[in-house]
Length: 539
Image (cartoon, rainbow, N blue to C red; front, side, top):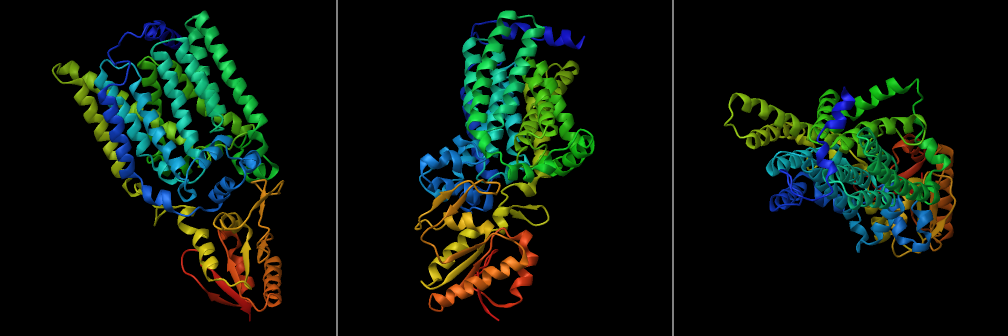
């Protein structure tokens, strides 16, 4: 019985090759452009854009930013686990202090794509489509997880491209044509350059289209979908294994080991992770899950069954890849696209429930305006959601009692610049390994050279041939740290009695060892801030 519903549901909507108008409209109207403009304006209200663009780069950002300073020929190695296209986009930013304009752009694209997803469903009127688009986009805009993804990594591209692909699936269902199918395939093939998650989302999107056309026995169309899917997936597979997979080294797999549950561990693991991620969704998991299901039903109800099926395949595919140890399962950063996609579909669910309620209300009072009732219900529900999550908005990296990110507790930029300003030619600098990439990036006057391979998660190291005054502590054990400081003091004496500066960044896991070691020396704090520079001398 369920299959018959999918087969018959709004069959005519995707069967016509023409572009004749439907009640919900085919082309963007002035109302659509105004809605998108309002959403983008609200983005600057909800997000602390100034902090996002101007804060210093922390560890995981520093090595990504540092790749911009390397020759273009070394980009395939320097990009490491970051998609090649993402690293290339960073090179297009004129000022390296503002590289976060790239994740900012993808943030904006996610909101616009979410609007398109809600708008492209087959609503009875154009205005209902605008309301649905606004509900979907607002849910994404207000999602707490969006507040913490200001870092210089590809996670915002993961979310944007996933939402774009699902929206294009709905667009392809709106009025069937090979051209639209070709656009979907081309975007999917291009997406892998900027987001590895494209390799997960694309099979789900085409899987939905294949299943719906097969159930409808539209064999010619099924062949077209299969050809498009094959072409897109061929490009994705070749590019991923030919270019991107080199970043998947042993250290990286070891780093993500805890995010690969076995089949027997899966139920408990899913329960723990869903509970842990609930604050980033901004509502209890059962509420988001219910709205997500309502969104999937709404997608099918409003004549976009392939998109609905894609949304059911996506969590199934991610879970399978997690168990197979191919992709971290429900980890905050790598699963950011899932959180955003869940919010978008939940937003569709809000619109569907609101319209369904308005339809029922009009049975009793036919004069009630369906669009106004739907808009009011959506506005009320989303306002409650926004009020509930009010502390998240304009998040600057540290909200006491709520959450903090590395941006708020690390500052290698200030430490590097302070030492550069105050050191003398005879001085020696000691730093921990995790400070090195940031120090190299914020020392633009010094030459850098790429060293590959290297036994860390990044897979490469930087050498600064003109900086013989710098000692990097690779080992984090107390004895090794002690030896590095002694070596620095000896070197400072040999250089004519210079001072020894100590820079540490992202050293939370080394704090106890450093405390033990520094007790044997005279320590003088030289700068303030969250990661102060200190001067070391013999006790």
